[in-house]
Image (cartoon, rainbow, N blue to C red; front, side, top):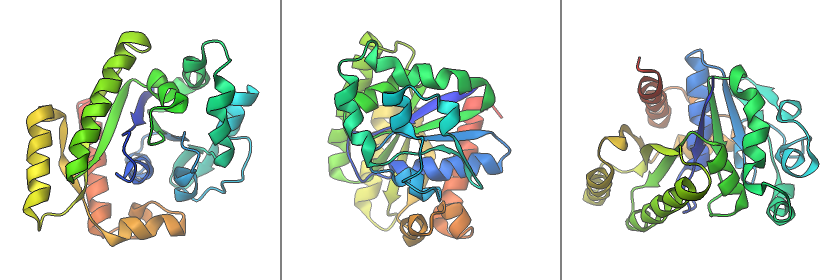
Length: 253
């Protein structure tokens, strides 16, 4: 049965989408069946996996048109994807008047649990109804955190959000782990931020740190994970290592 992991942080630009795309491919390369669900109207995870944003049916079809999630799946060399595009931006408004609006994504993904080992959900950078749906559907949250000062404020906000979700919507939701992204080993400040986050979250912080790496930034323009774009880059090696760490954490091997 699939482990559903929401990749979330209320702060934008921290590497959520890169983490989703590259973990999807890293785990597929390890023989796992993986689905990436793009729940951000920007559709960057969709294009980052080489899928046309204009493709339908998509995530909007699931949330607003009662289309089954299975009908929306696109197969790619890097893993399966449920795509999205800017149409999804209207879904939050349309969901407001629906019954059990927080659980629509959860109910849609439930039939897919037996078909995958991992399902990643790329969340928008805000606490809106789409994010709430993702957290309601997920077993756990993986949090990419950029190694900068404002990250410390953002992660405190996210912790509050998770507690609220636990109390009102999904009592089983837990933090899967914290991924330090855009880490620059040449600066003392990155080390200081890493130390502060580790002091707060302890062993929830993954040992693998994702470095600042131009190849990670270039890969989406080619519609590929960095692992496929430049297999020997530092960014690629880091995401492969992170995938191994996640599998060991979840599966105990």
